[in-house]
Image (cartoon, rainbow, N blue to C red; front, side, top):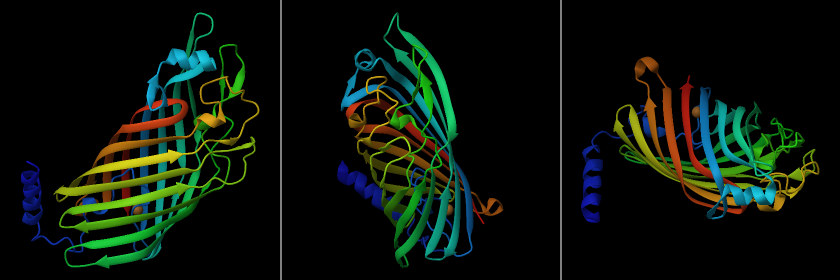
Length: 337
Ligand SMILES: [Cu+2]
């Protein structure tokens, strides 16, 4: 059966082989799945602007890799965010300084809707919403390898930059005794520190297929004004995509992320006030499986793209009770000119 599928895939691939990929045109699969940031460079003098919306939802809790009941989390912490959705509105601005160097600036605006629950008294549930600017990433994409052959190509670039602390670290919530506390570390909108971004991206393409891999890592330095430093964050992802028509490609992507505990602590937030308030229980790792669609506009819509990606977790493990990820999705529009 496996051989049969492989033979079929090869036949499909070769049936398109006559249409060489290096035809100088743009293709939907030239861009990585939309959840991959900083996957492509632009030619010297070319601009790209884009709007990228990312939405994720968590419900309930996991500790280690197992689900734990909300009741057990609330009995240890008093209060817990039993359901959360997070929407991130990102502006993507890219400019080709030269053919080998593209600058990317990505400001973001975040909206979090939470359901807080406590076990005290007769039980207490309330919803609340926080919104505001997140941190702003400024990255340079620098090409270090670019080989184009008649029927395939391979490219590698570095992703080097910094995340600027434009996001608030002073978002608050009101507990069931009407006491105002800062939200726990991972529900704040920023890190409060200047965080170097170090990464690299590989892109390959041949005959209507494209594939790639990327690692992006955020290093936290120093301490923020509230006396702590978020843990470093590491990501690694790999994908494969295929054209299905001139203007559309489908993709599959695995996405791994890991993050460390918080160092120091926000003294205004007692450890057991709410789940997530203990800096030593905030490390984690997660793998998501994503399917995606890229659409590329025809001549009249030259260089406009619409992309979507939807991901489900296939592995999650945390160093303390942390929100259980349900799904994450991205929608984006991009325009190069
Ligand atoms: Cu771009």
